[in-house]
Amino acid sequence: MPALAPRNRPWQYQAVPRWVYVVAAAGALFVLVPLVGMVAKVNWGKFIPLITSPSSLDALLLSLKTASASTALCIIFGVPLALVLARAQFPGQRILRALILLPLVVPPVVGGLALLYTFGREGLVGRSLTVLGIDIAFSTTAVVMAQAFVALPFLVLSLEGTLRTAGQKYEAVAATLGARPSTVLRRITVPLVLPGLLSGAVLSFARSLGEFGATLTFAGSLQGVTRTLPLEIYLQRETDPDAAVALSFLLIAVAVVVVALTYRAPQQPARVPEPTEAAAP
Amino acid sequence: MTRIFRKPAAAAALLLTVSLAACSGGAAGTGTTAAPGSTPGLSGTLTVFAAASLKSTFTDLATIFEKDNPRAKVALSFDGSSTLVSQITQGAPADVFASADQANMAKLSDARLVEGTPAIFATNILTMVVPPDNPAHIKTFADLARPGVKVVVCAAQVPCGAAAKTDEAAAGVVVKPVSEELNVTSVLGKVTSGEADAGLVYVTDAATAGDKVKAIPLKLARPTVNKYPIAAVATSQKQALAKAFLTLVTGPAGRKVLRDAGFGTP
Image (spheres, chains in turn blue, purple):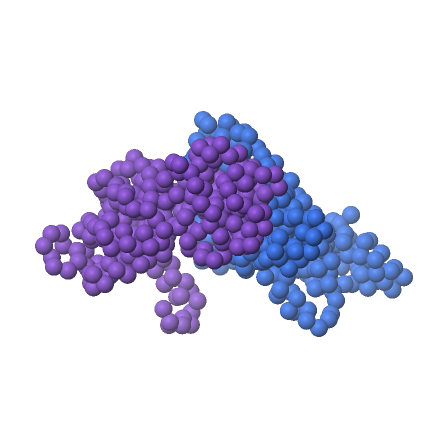
């Protein structure tokens, strides 16, 4: 069981120049004020009927379902990727890292197009899948793929950072005591970086929940099948701005709850209790 | 801007100032406002907000307008009509608004932001589009109701979706779409990429797509006709310039450009 960092540290240099607080406050307000502006627009009298309409509920359920599935995919593929990037050394590693992180900087619509031209009916891979009778486009699977595509880098980035900060001391010790690599991974590495993995997974979930562009381009939009909450919000905005605002508030609330429950400050890998050098920086 | 800033802070500050200036009002710094009435040449920058489906025609019309009025400039902004309406009601500096449907123009009228009465300057009807090789062998509107045919339409909340619903009802065709897209461009995209077997889009969209799609007319006795209204925005300080642009769009030159693109004209 990994212990949390001690609350009462002996003494730590913490002075932050005063002007930094000013700029930080401006930055925080820049993010918070628009949220307040939106909350002020919510029509509370109609809030419950608006968010419990069949189309809204379908969209919310679909969003939670697909974001969970995409987070699972991100963990399955992201953990090995982060391990390889942080621990292994091979030619082309830097290029691989840059390419894996590409979905972070590419507009989601471009990601959606890339998926379409790969897994679509006429796509590179999709053509063979169609022959096998597998059709991905316009299905919930396509939504999950679009979300995983944009969310994977968040998990890889977060976990790779944690792996590097955690170091390999304990792993090396375990190996000298005769543990096989898989045992080291299971008993030492994964427990050690669990907080990083968790925050990475939360980030991936949040990103999946908000996914819009890639889903729209790759999966389409049909109630209960591919129309997730962000797509429903965009559509409602056309005719019923009140409903769009209510759903936006719902989406933000879900995201806040998920993040608050699970996300901890980054860069704090759990330390295995270690009496001899517990307070060492 | 080509100058390279050594200090990022200076660059950021400038960027912030520029973007704030661009957001607020917009009237400042866009040249002299045309004096009303008898000035021989109109001048200044006219900001036109137009529906996305008007992109190519209004780009051409802006060029013609600038040629006719050498001291005037036209700044164009294209987006979904409802997006543009919410931008204008939130204070975006538009002088002219051209909508893809009357409902959105009505929203602007309700906000008392329309000068005078909007003029209908173009009409549009729906058509079927299929990939060039027509994989599902679509021939008639009724073919869209066949099981297994992947049809993509607009969602009923957007004008092209509302029109599709009405046309389906009129023809007695029950289409079960695989996707109800948020705008007509997405419908077209799903067909050009070969993802869908057929889609319902405006005839002008089909014309824009060229040989990437094959258009098959719906052949309805009374198709739903989508009407495009245009009007000057009431808060605009450039009514003379706006009026001149409206005259161009609704006049013979405007009609020619619009007809060439596949629009109907009133």
